[in-house]
Image (cartoon, rainbow, N blue to C red; front, side):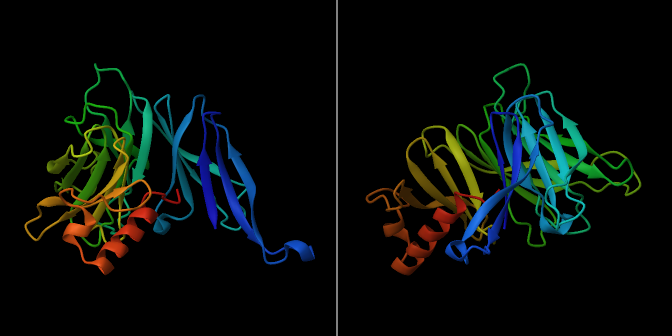
Length: 285
């Protein structure tokens, strides 16, 4: 297992889990070893994410100075060596990043970057960057201009063969966007343009929303906010999103509330959703 962490000390660290030791007392036990420290940032590193597996062993960081860095480990057996492959400069302080997990050749590698910048002169706190095979660089493809408040978390939904992308955003509320790629010339060096649609917007937390996370089939979204609750969102066959469950911080359902787990789900389904939500809120990246 490999873990990446980031910190206000301007670094990102890659850790590897080691199981088994020659020492009899530690044999069979696991512990974590620091493999490398990435020190390129000049300000706080605010988020770190591994790229999708089909891209190889790549790691992305974003910093308060608005720089996104993409590293690659050329040898997966040597986690102490990482090379800086790309630097993406944004005009806004970066707070969170998310890779598009699509492995389809029809979709170029794509990163969504969220900002908590307080500068109101810059509209659009979410930017989408896409890799271009012609220039071999990442370029800004889209800015979500309707997101004007601080963004705390951002998450692409698993693609599952869709021709479009779905992006969840945690800001002063929960928002779900649909990004439909517009056809372009494959030899063009210009980034893809998207038709941006708002699928859903919820202010049920009545407070800042801090985390959003999808289940593996992208049918369920979990969000957590300052109200101390985790809320589960699901779309029906008409693609209308509604709250299907509310959980307290300790994992127990909120009784007497619209959408409480006990009111809309059977006990087995409720327990499954509860377990899934607990896992979703603590992503390995």
